Length: 181
Length: 227
Image 1 (cartoon, rainbow over the protein chains, first blue to last red):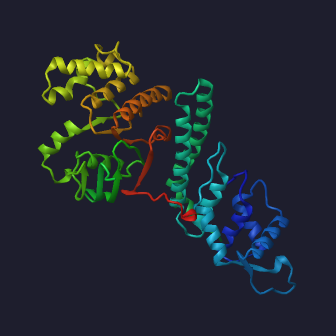
Image 2: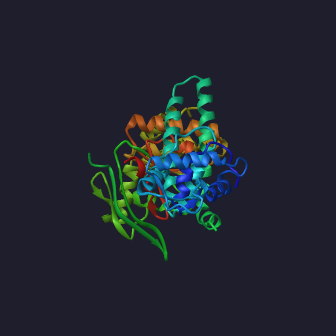
Image 3: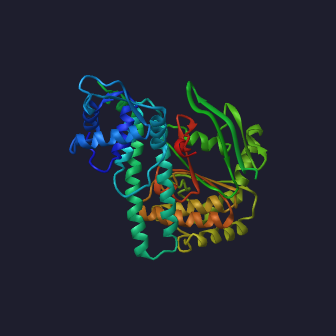
Protein backbone atom coordinates (compact mmCIF):
# COMPACT_ATOMS: atom_id res chain seq x y z
CA UNK A 1 0.00 0.00 0.00
CA UNK A 2 1.48 3.30 -0.97
CA UNK A 3 -0.59 6.41 -0.59
CA UNK A 4 1.28 9.68 -0.59
CA UNK A 5 -0.80 12.71 0.05
CA UNK A 6 -2.44 14.67 2.78
CA UNK A 7 -3.75 12.44 5.54
CA UNK A 8 -5.01 13.87 8.78
CA UNK A 9 -2.16 12.51 10.90
CA UNK A 10 -3.58 13.23 14.33
CA UNK A 11 -6.94 11.67 13.62
CA UNK A 12 -5.34 8.71 11.93
CA UNK A 13 -3.14 8.16 15.00
CA UNK A 14 -6.20 8.51 17.22
CA UNK A 15 -7.94 5.98 15.00
CA UNK A 16 -5.06 3.53 15.37
CA UNK A 17 -5.13 3.99 19.13
CA UNK A 18 -8.80 3.10 19.14
CA UNK A 19 -7.85 -0.29 17.71
CA UNK A 20 -5.72 -1.03 20.77
CA UNK A 21 -3.58 0.84 23.33
CA UNK A 22 -0.07 1.45 22.06
CA UNK A 23 3.31 2.94 22.87
CA UNK A 24 4.25 5.99 20.84
CA UNK A 25 7.08 4.05 19.22
CA UNK A 26 4.81 1.20 18.09
CA UNK A 27 2.14 3.65 17.02
CA UNK A 28 4.55 5.42 14.69
CA UNK A 29 5.53 2.13 13.08
CA UNK A 30 1.94 1.02 12.65
CA UNK A 31 1.17 4.37 11.05
CA UNK A 32 4.13 4.05 8.70
CA UNK A 33 3.10 0.55 7.71
CA UNK A 34 -0.25 1.72 6.40
CA UNK A 35 0.15 5.37 5.54
CA UNK A 36 3.80 6.33 5.56
CA UNK A 37 5.49 3.91 3.23
CA UNK A 38 7.14 6.70 1.27
CA UNK A 39 6.92 9.40 3.90
CA UNK A 40 7.27 8.02 7.41
CA UNK A 41 5.97 10.11 10.26
CA UNK A 42 8.62 11.82 12.40
CA UNK A 43 8.72 10.77 16.06
CA UNK A 44 8.38 14.42 16.98
CA UNK A 45 5.08 14.63 15.12
CA UNK A 46 3.82 11.52 16.87
CA UNK A 47 4.64 12.79 20.33
CA UNK A 48 3.29 16.26 19.60
CA UNK A 49 0.03 14.69 18.47
CA UNK A 50 -0.09 12.45 21.53
CA UNK A 51 0.44 15.45 23.81
CA UNK A 52 -2.34 17.35 22.05
CA UNK A 53 -4.73 14.43 22.21
CA UNK A 54 -3.95 13.93 25.90
CA UNK A 55 -4.60 17.61 26.58
CA UNK A 56 -7.93 17.35 24.72
CA UNK A 57 -8.99 14.30 26.72
CA UNK A 58 -9.06 12.05 23.67
CA UNK A 59 -6.43 9.68 25.04
CA UNK A 60 -4.84 9.00 28.38
CA UNK A 61 -1.51 7.50 29.26
CA UNK A 62 -1.55 4.28 31.20
CA UNK A 63 0.81 3.87 34.17
CA UNK A 64 4.36 4.95 33.32
CA UNK A 65 6.91 2.25 33.04
CA UNK A 66 10.49 2.53 34.15
CA UNK A 67 12.15 5.58 32.69
CA UNK A 68 8.93 7.47 32.20
CA UNK A 69 9.90 9.12 28.90
CA UNK A 70 7.29 9.65 26.21
CA UNK A 71 8.28 6.44 24.44
CA UNK A 72 7.77 4.51 27.69
CA UNK A 73 4.13 5.47 28.00
CA UNK A 74 1.31 3.42 26.70
CA UNK A 75 -1.63 5.41 25.42
CA UNK A 76 -5.27 4.42 25.39
CA UNK A 77 -8.18 6.12 23.69
CA UNK A 78 -10.99 7.59 25.84
CA UNK A 79 -14.70 7.71 25.03
CA UNK A 80 -14.16 11.31 23.90
CA UNK A 81 -11.47 10.04 21.54
CA UNK A 82 -13.63 7.22 20.20
CA UNK A 83 -16.45 9.64 19.50
CA UNK A 84 -14.04 11.93 17.67
CA UNK A 85 -12.79 9.03 15.52
CA UNK A 86 -16.36 8.02 14.70
CA UNK A 87 -17.24 11.61 13.75
CA UNK A 88 -14.18 11.81 11.54
CA UNK A 89 -14.85 8.51 9.80
CA UNK A 90 -18.46 9.21 8.99
CA UNK A 91 -18.09 12.86 8.04
CA UNK A 92 -17.46 12.88 4.31
CA UNK A 93 -14.56 14.85 2.91
CA UNK A 94 -15.21 17.66 0.49
CA UNK A 95 -14.85 16.09 -2.94
CA UNK A 96 -11.74 17.42 -4.58
CA UNK A 97 -10.00 16.67 -7.81
CA UNK A 98 -7.22 14.71 -6.12
CA UNK A 99 -7.05 11.29 -4.58
CA UNK A 100 -8.98 11.08 -1.35
CA UNK A 101 -6.09 9.83 0.77
CA UNK A 102 -7.92 10.86 3.90
CA UNK A 103 -10.71 8.58 2.76
CA UNK A 104 -8.19 5.79 2.38
CA UNK A 105 -7.06 6.34 5.98
CA UNK A 106 -10.64 6.37 7.23
CA UNK A 107 -11.41 3.13 5.43
CA UNK A 108 -8.39 1.36 6.93
CA UNK A 109 -9.19 2.63 10.42
CA UNK A 110 -12.85 1.63 10.08
CA UNK A 111 -11.80 -1.90 9.19
CA UNK A 112 -9.23 -2.05 11.99
CA UNK A 113 -11.76 -0.96 14.62
CA UNK A 114 -14.38 -3.25 13.05
CA UNK A 115 -16.72 -0.37 12.24
CA UNK A 116 -18.94 -0.06 9.18
CA UNK A 117 -16.55 0.71 6.32
CA UNK A 118 -19.29 0.08 3.76
CA UNK A 119 -21.33 2.85 5.26
CA UNK A 120 -18.41 5.21 5.38
CA UNK A 121 -17.90 4.69 1.65
CA UNK A 122 -21.62 5.16 0.99
CA UNK A 123 -21.60 8.44 2.90
CA UNK A 124 -18.64 9.65 0.86
CA UNK A 125 -20.24 8.46 -2.39
CA UNK A 126 -23.30 10.55 -1.57
CA UNK A 127 -21.11 13.59 -0.97
CA UNK A 128 -19.29 13.06 -4.24
CA UNK A 129 -22.54 12.67 -6.15
CA UNK A 130 -23.91 15.83 -4.56
CA UNK A 131 -20.85 17.71 -5.81
CA UNK A 132 -21.31 16.16 -9.26
CA UNK A 133 -24.92 17.35 -9.26
CA UNK A 134 -23.75 20.90 -8.51
CA UNK A 135 -21.24 20.78 -11.33
CA UNK A 136 -23.81 19.29 -13.71
CA UNK A 137 -26.26 22.07 -12.87
CA UNK A 138 -23.49 24.59 -13.39
CA UNK A 139 -23.05 23.28 -16.93
CA UNK A 140 -26.63 24.01 -17.91
CA UNK A 141 -26.59 27.06 -20.12
CA UNK A 142 -22.91 27.80 -19.42
CA UNK A 143 -20.45 28.71 -22.17
CA UNK A 144 -18.28 25.94 -23.56
CA UNK A 145 -15.18 26.94 -21.58
CA UNK A 146 -17.10 26.70 -18.34
CA UNK A 147 -18.61 23.39 -19.48
CA UNK A 148 -15.16 21.97 -20.15
CA UNK A 149 -13.88 23.07 -16.74
CA UNK A 150 -16.88 21.45 -15.07
CA UNK A 151 -16.30 18.29 -17.13
CA UNK A 152 -12.70 18.19 -15.95
CA UNK A 153 -13.83 18.33 -12.31
CA UNK A 154 -16.58 15.78 -12.98
CA UNK A 155 -14.20 13.22 -14.47
CA UNK A 156 -11.80 13.57 -11.55
CA UNK A 157 -14.56 13.12 -9.01
CA UNK A 158 -15.79 10.17 -11.02
CA UNK A 159 -12.35 8.59 -10.72
CA UNK A 160 -12.67 8.82 -6.93
CA UNK A 161 -16.08 7.22 -7.17
CA UNK A 162 -14.66 4.33 -9.13
CA UNK A 163 -12.09 3.88 -6.38
CA UNK A 164 -14.88 3.96 -3.79
CA UNK A 165 -16.87 1.33 -5.71
CA UNK A 166 -13.89 -0.93 -6.20
CA UNK A 167 -12.80 -0.57 -2.58
CA UNK A 168 -16.35 -1.33 -1.47
CA UNK A 169 -16.23 -4.53 -3.49
CA UNK A 170 -12.87 -5.48 -1.94
CA UNK A 171 -13.56 -4.69 1.71
CA UNK A 172 -13.68 -8.31 2.83
CA UNK A 173 -10.33 -9.04 1.22
CA UNK A 174 -8.87 -5.80 2.58
CA UNK A 175 -10.13 -6.58 6.08
CA UNK A 176 -8.22 -9.87 6.00
CA UNK A 177 -5.05 -8.32 4.62
CA UNK A 178 -4.62 -5.48 7.09
CA UNK A 179 -5.04 -7.34 10.36
CA UNK A 180 -2.56 -6.01 12.88
CA UNK A 181 -0.01 -8.56 14.05
CA UNK B 1 -47.00 15.55 0.76
CA UNK B 2 -47.92 12.01 -0.21
CA UNK B 3 -45.31 10.39 -2.39
CA UNK B 4 -46.32 9.40 -5.91
CA UNK B 5 -44.59 6.04 -5.57
CA UNK B 6 -44.58 4.26 -2.24
CA UNK B 7 -42.89 0.91 -1.73
CA UNK B 8 -43.20 -0.85 1.60
CA UNK B 9 -41.38 -3.94 2.77
CA UNK B 10 -40.53 -5.18 -0.72
CA UNK B 11 -39.11 -8.68 -0.82
CA UNK B 12 -38.39 -10.70 -3.91
CA UNK B 13 -36.81 -14.13 -4.28
CA UNK B 14 -35.48 -15.84 -7.36
CA UNK B 15 -35.20 -19.44 -6.25
CA UNK B 16 -33.13 -19.22 -3.08
CA UNK B 17 -31.65 -15.85 -4.02
CA UNK B 18 -32.90 -12.99 -1.91
CA UNK B 19 -33.00 -10.25 -4.57
CA UNK B 20 -34.89 -7.66 -2.48
CA UNK B 21 -34.73 -7.82 1.28
CA UNK B 22 -37.30 -5.42 2.67
CA UNK B 23 -37.14 -2.14 0.77
CA UNK B 24 -39.11 0.93 1.83
CA UNK B 25 -39.01 3.81 -0.61
CA UNK B 26 -40.90 7.02 -1.34
CA UNK B 27 -40.55 8.92 -4.60
CA UNK B 28 -42.25 12.28 -4.99
CA UNK B 29 -44.17 13.42 -8.04
CA UNK B 30 -41.81 15.07 -10.51
CA UNK B 31 -38.73 13.78 -8.75
CA UNK B 32 -35.76 12.45 -10.71
CA UNK B 33 -34.14 9.57 -8.86
CA UNK B 34 -31.04 7.62 -9.85
CA UNK B 35 -30.86 4.02 -8.68
CA UNK B 36 -27.26 2.89 -8.24
CA UNK B 37 -25.48 -0.12 -6.85
CA UNK B 38 -23.16 -2.96 -7.81
CA UNK B 39 -24.12 -5.58 -10.39
CA UNK B 40 -26.53 -8.09 -8.94
CA UNK B 41 -27.48 -5.79 -6.06
CA UNK B 42 -31.18 -5.80 -6.90
CA UNK B 43 -31.52 -2.54 -8.86
CA UNK B 44 -33.40 -4.08 -11.78
CA UNK B 45 -35.63 -6.17 -9.51
CA UNK B 46 -36.52 -3.01 -7.62
CA UNK B 47 -37.29 -1.08 -10.80
CA UNK B 48 -39.40 -3.93 -12.16
CA UNK B 49 -41.37 -4.18 -8.93
CA UNK B 50 -41.96 -0.42 -8.85
CA UNK B 51 -43.18 -0.59 -12.46
CA UNK B 52 -45.47 -3.54 -11.87
CA UNK B 53 -43.49 -5.72 -14.26
CA UNK B 54 -42.57 -8.06 -11.42
CA UNK B 55 -44.69 -8.84 -8.40
CA UNK B 56 -42.81 -8.88 -5.11
CA UNK B 57 -43.16 -11.96 -2.91
CA UNK B 58 -44.18 -9.66 -0.09
CA UNK B 59 -44.65 -5.95 0.41
CA UNK B 60 -46.64 -3.39 -1.55
CA UNK B 61 -46.11 -0.80 -4.24
CA UNK B 62 -48.58 2.00 -4.73
CA UNK B 63 -48.48 4.60 -7.48
CA UNK B 64 -50.70 7.63 -7.20
CA UNK B 65 -52.69 5.90 -4.47
CA UNK B 66 -53.33 2.72 -6.49
CA UNK B 67 -51.83 -0.37 -4.89
CA UNK B 68 -50.44 -1.91 -8.06
CA UNK B 69 -49.27 -5.06 -6.31
CA UNK B 70 -52.93 -5.88 -5.65
CA UNK B 71 -53.97 -5.56 -9.31
CA UNK B 72 -54.44 -8.40 -11.78
CA UNK B 73 -51.85 -8.81 -14.53
CA UNK B 74 -54.31 -7.37 -17.06
CA UNK B 75 -54.93 -4.26 -14.98
CA UNK B 76 -51.23 -3.80 -14.28
CA UNK B 77 -50.56 -4.10 -17.98
CA UNK B 78 -53.17 -1.45 -18.75
CA UNK B 79 -51.71 0.80 -16.06
CA UNK B 80 -48.19 0.39 -17.48
CA UNK B 81 -49.40 1.36 -20.94
CA UNK B 82 -51.22 4.45 -19.70
CA UNK B 83 -49.14 5.71 -16.79
CA UNK B 84 -45.60 4.44 -17.32
CA UNK B 85 -42.94 4.87 -19.96
CA UNK B 86 -39.88 2.66 -20.33
CA UNK B 87 -36.42 3.29 -21.77
CA UNK B 88 -33.80 0.55 -21.88
CA UNK B 89 -30.05 0.51 -22.48
CA UNK B 90 -30.47 -0.56 -26.07
CA UNK B 91 -33.52 1.29 -27.38
CA UNK B 92 -35.24 -1.94 -28.38
CA UNK B 93 -36.88 -0.30 -31.37
CA UNK B 94 -38.64 -2.53 -33.84
CA UNK B 95 -36.12 -2.73 -36.70
CA UNK B 96 -38.65 -2.93 -39.55
CA UNK B 97 -40.58 0.16 -38.53
CA UNK B 98 -39.48 3.75 -39.13
CA UNK B 99 -38.64 5.96 -36.17
CA UNK B 100 -42.03 7.66 -36.26
CA UNK B 101 -43.88 4.34 -36.53
CA UNK B 102 -41.95 3.05 -33.53
CA UNK B 103 -43.07 6.06 -31.54
CA UNK B 104 -46.72 5.55 -32.46
CA UNK B 105 -46.83 2.01 -31.04
CA UNK B 106 -47.93 2.84 -27.48
CA UNK B 107 -50.57 5.25 -28.81
CA UNK B 108 -51.97 2.68 -31.23
CA UNK B 109 -52.00 0.07 -28.46
CA UNK B 110 -53.95 2.57 -26.40
CA UNK B 111 -56.58 2.84 -29.14
CA UNK B 112 -55.61 6.12 -30.77
CA UNK B 113 -56.31 6.54 -34.52
CA UNK B 114 -53.21 6.18 -36.68
CA UNK B 115 -53.28 9.66 -38.18
CA UNK B 116 -53.58 11.27 -34.77
CA UNK B 117 -50.84 9.00 -33.42
CA UNK B 118 -48.51 9.95 -36.27
CA UNK B 119 -49.02 13.65 -35.58
CA UNK B 120 -48.30 13.19 -31.89
CA UNK B 121 -45.26 11.00 -32.61
CA UNK B 122 -43.78 13.55 -35.01
CA UNK B 123 -44.29 16.24 -32.39
CA UNK B 124 -42.22 14.29 -29.85
CA UNK B 125 -39.52 13.50 -32.39
CA UNK B 126 -39.34 17.23 -33.19
CA UNK B 127 -38.95 18.05 -29.52
CA UNK B 128 -36.01 15.65 -29.38
CA UNK B 129 -34.38 17.18 -32.45
CA UNK B 130 -35.19 14.23 -34.70
CA UNK B 131 -37.31 15.83 -37.42
CA UNK B 132 -35.00 14.56 -40.14
CA UNK B 133 -34.75 11.04 -38.76
CA UNK B 134 -38.49 10.48 -38.41
CA UNK B 135 -38.84 8.39 -41.55
CA UNK B 136 -35.61 6.42 -41.17
CA UNK B 137 -35.31 2.86 -39.97
CA UNK B 138 -33.55 2.21 -36.64
CA UNK B 139 -30.61 0.64 -38.47
CA UNK B 140 -29.98 3.96 -40.24
CA UNK B 141 -29.78 5.95 -36.98
CA UNK B 142 -26.78 6.63 -34.74
CA UNK B 143 -26.86 5.17 -31.22
CA UNK B 144 -27.78 8.56 -29.76
CA UNK B 145 -30.56 9.12 -32.29
CA UNK B 146 -31.99 5.63 -31.72
CA UNK B 147 -32.02 6.27 -27.98
CA UNK B 148 -33.82 9.55 -28.46
CA UNK B 149 -36.44 7.74 -30.54
CA UNK B 150 -36.83 5.30 -27.66
CA UNK B 151 -37.30 8.25 -25.30
CA UNK B 152 -39.92 9.76 -27.63
CA UNK B 153 -41.73 6.40 -27.65
CA UNK B 154 -41.62 6.31 -23.85
CA UNK B 155 -42.90 9.86 -23.43
CA UNK B 156 -45.50 9.97 -26.22
CA UNK B 157 -48.26 8.76 -23.92
CA UNK B 158 -47.30 11.48 -21.42
CA UNK B 159 -46.77 8.99 -18.61
CA UNK B 160 -46.68 10.03 -14.99
CA UNK B 161 -43.57 7.93 -14.43
CA UNK B 162 -40.68 7.18 -16.75
CA UNK B 163 -38.58 4.14 -15.84
CA UNK B 164 -35.15 4.02 -17.46
CA UNK B 165 -32.60 1.20 -17.20
CA UNK B 166 -29.10 2.42 -18.14
CA UNK B 167 -30.58 4.80 -20.73
CA UNK B 168 -27.16 5.99 -21.88
CA UNK B 169 -25.19 2.83 -21.14
CA UNK B 170 -24.48 2.12 -24.79
CA UNK B 171 -23.46 5.65 -25.77
CA UNK B 172 -20.19 7.58 -25.77
CA UNK B 173 -19.79 10.52 -23.37
CA UNK B 174 -20.98 13.28 -25.67
CA UNK B 175 -23.92 11.34 -27.12
CA UNK B 176 -24.88 10.29 -23.59
CA UNK B 177 -24.83 13.90 -22.43
CA UNK B 178 -26.95 15.06 -25.35
CA UNK B 179 -29.50 12.29 -24.81
CA UNK B 180 -29.68 12.93 -21.07
CA UNK B 181 -30.02 16.67 -21.48
CA UNK B 182 -32.86 16.20 -23.98
CA UNK B 183 -34.63 13.61 -21.81
CA UNK B 184 -34.29 15.64 -18.62
CA UNK B 185 -35.54 18.81 -20.28
CA UNK B 186 -38.72 17.08 -21.41
CA UNK B 187 -39.21 15.23 -18.15
CA UNK B 188 -38.78 18.35 -16.02
CA UNK B 189 -41.02 20.41 -18.26
CA UNK B 190 -43.80 17.83 -18.07
CA UNK B 191 -43.34 17.17 -14.35
CA UNK B 192 -42.79 13.49 -15.11
CA UNK B 193 -41.26 11.38 -12.36
CA UNK B 194 -38.10 9.66 -13.55
CA UNK B 195 -36.65 6.54 -11.94
CA UNK B 196 -33.39 5.72 -13.66
CA UNK B 197 -30.99 2.87 -13.06
CA UNK B 198 -27.42 3.85 -13.82
CA UNK B 199 -23.95 2.73 -12.88
CA UNK B 200 -22.56 5.97 -14.27
CA UNK B 201 -22.10 8.77 -11.71
CA UNK B 202 -22.19 11.43 -14.43
CA UNK B 203 -25.64 10.20 -15.41
CA UNK B 204 -26.72 10.05 -11.78
CA UNK B 205 -25.61 13.65 -11.39
CA UNK B 206 -28.60 14.71 -13.48
CA UNK B 207 -30.93 13.32 -10.82
CA UNK B 208 -32.31 15.12 -7.78
CA UNK B 209 -30.98 12.33 -5.58
CA UNK B 210 -29.63 8.84 -5.77
CA UNK B 211 -30.53 5.71 -3.91
CA UNK B 212 -27.97 2.97 -3.55
CA UNK B 213 -29.05 -0.66 -3.54
CA UNK B 214 -26.71 -3.17 -2.00
CA UNK B 215 -27.53 -6.82 -1.34
CA UNK B 216 -31.21 -6.16 -1.91
CA UNK B 217 -31.40 -3.31 0.59
CA UNK B 218 -31.08 0.46 0.42
CA UNK B 219 -27.72 1.64 1.69
CA UNK B 220 -27.82 4.08 4.59
CA UNK B 221 -26.07 7.27 3.63
CA UNK B 222 -26.78 9.54 6.56
CA UNK B 223 -23.74 10.95 8.31
CA UNK B 224 -23.24 9.48 11.75
CA UNK B 225 -20.81 12.16 12.81
CA UNK B 226 -22.80 15.20 11.80
CA UNK B 227 -26.34 14.43 12.90
